[in-house]
Length: 323
Image 1 (cartoon, rainbow, N blue to C red):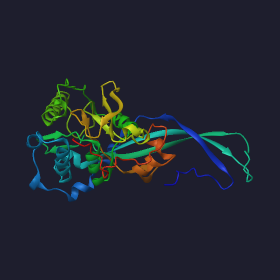
Image 2: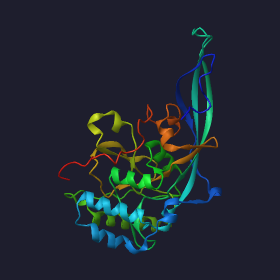
Image 3: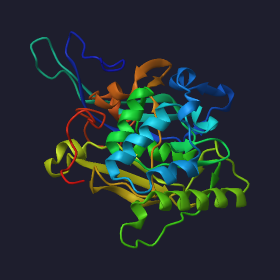
Image 4: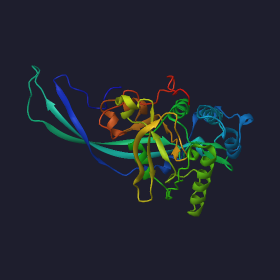
């Protein structure tokens, strides 16, 4: 994808390293209403649908990878609460400082380095809660490893968030609950029954504050996120990145963490999806391409470099043996 607006001119105008100088708090565009998730308009197989509790009972004794397959199958069959079949629109602005150097046709510097700033408006459609299995009356938010999460994201033409985008989603929260951690006892926190217990606790905390499923609510889960560290640090390329679980004051319980293998998930992990078609200054872009663009990535990421591949590659045989 070509850089936005700022190509190098024929006479030799060079774009030097630039930086993020300001960012306004994100907000929900309530005038935009909702956008239907295209996938779910044509995929709604009620014959395989289970309630959240029934699904937990079904997968309770399965191994990790089998449970992942069952979770993906239920979600892609459309067995999710109705609020997860609609995106909501979030907007934010970013001001970036650009540094330019003009050159003569002979290649010599022509005048001083110039500094300019430009404000960019970003618009994106986001699922209001974490992926869940079940119906409106009985559902469970299901943690997933990064490979299963990416499979669902690809099917729905979505992306997982970066830490930067996770922060923006946190900013638009319509309510905040305190995080509800479980004490680790053996591997209980990785078991489906713990997923259901955590889900019930979250719902109870939301009800106590008058909050409803389908609103943006802070404090529910850690996000499975994208980070360039997984592709640039060889020891971690088969791992998962997690971030978030925001306290009511806005600070994350979990800084960016990449030490878990891709076979790991626990009750505190959640899958939040962003539709890949976003707008920058009114023009449509593919979010994945933006993350991989050497200039535009700064509008959706706070990392130092763009992505080589802005997704987990679930098509590779990345399963650890014996898991």
